[in-house]
Each structure stands twice: as C-alpha cells, then as structure tokens.
Length: 237
Image (cartoon, rainbow, N blue to C red; front, side):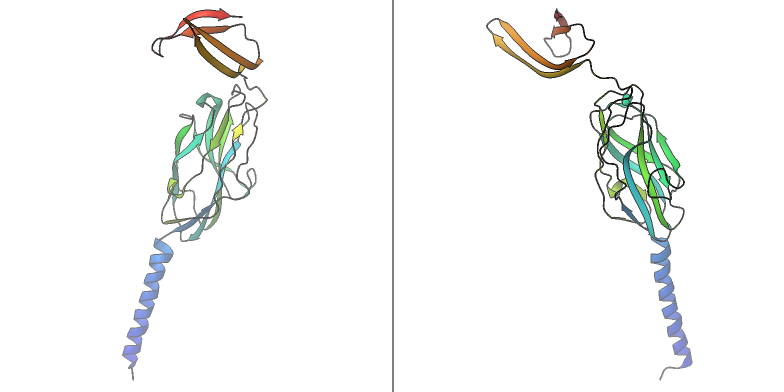
C-alpha cells in the first residue's frame, strides 16, 4: 500500500512529465502546413503594362505554437521573358483565400535582378498568430514589354521557406506561364520561321523564311571568323 507521500510524489512526477511534453512539443517546436490549391495562378495572357499579375500562390497554416516566417530563398522564375519586361516582383499576404479579398498587405517588392533565375524575399515575421495566412507572388509588367515573352514562377520547395520549427507540405501545384499579349506590347518586327545554309563549291548559299514582317526595311548578312566579331557583307531589301 502506497503512502500519501508516495502518491503525492507520483502525481508531481506525472504533472512534470506532462508539462515538459507540452512545453517541448506545444510551445518550443512550431509546426506549419504549407500548401496551394485552386487559387494557384493558371496560364494567362496579361497585356503589357498589366499590374499585380499572379505568378504563384501558397498558404501557411499554423497548427502548433507560433512559428516565424521570415523569408523565401532562391525561388526561380523562368521563361522567354527578360528583366526589362517587368517593373517588379511582389510578395503579398492576406487573411482571405482569394487575391483582392480581405486585407492585402505588400510584404516585399523586388525591383532589381528581375530576369530569369533565382530570387529571394526577406522580411519581418508574417505569421503573428494561429490559423491560415495566404500569400501570392505577383509581377507588374512594363508598358513596353515584348509581345510573346512569357514568365513562370517555378515550383517552390519546402526548403525555400524560412520558417522556424517543422514545415509540412499539403498539395503543391506548378503555376501556369504568363505570356504578354496585347496592350502596348512591342512585337518583334520579323517572325523567323527557318534559316538554313549549305556550301556550293566556293560559295555558301543561305535560305530563310518569315511568317510576318512589320516595319522592316532590309536584312543584313554578316560573317565572322571567330563567332565574336562580325562584318557586314550584304544587305537585302
């Protein structure tokens, strides 16, 4: 038979173990579920000059404690676009699932190094409490963005999110390409279909065809001995 002192000691030990488990796994280790869903950006055809064009979407659902979300490192954009097609790339946060609803907050705006390649956001903690926070990556297109140029925000992996504690994925989707069409976009003057050449004795024969030609006056043929320096040899109207 256990004495009152022994029972009291056992109860204290159980309380300590429970408190320790709760403290260790409930307050010190933060858990965040990261996922995307139907709000993900699908393929689109924004006009030159279009603003807040959706490139990517994800949610952060805090399930345990209070994690800290302070950056996205080395996410990648790809496609045929060039840096000059964009004015900026932005990260937004909202308390509502659809872009434009709820309270939208610009977390950070990138204005340099906008071409295809890796980019990073760094910011103050964006997960102030429990529940879900919704995030979007958008782009503002330049008024003279080139027609046909396309940008895609490639898949974000769990390692790119700078979040304290545990990070778990839900469903993650690949975003659709955003291809500049219409508006004030600047089309290429020549849409080249093919270009071929062959040696015929002491001469070279060159053949090319175009689908469209707009406001162009002539073609210039150039030659090079090293692939770096070129010299004009003929102009053809």
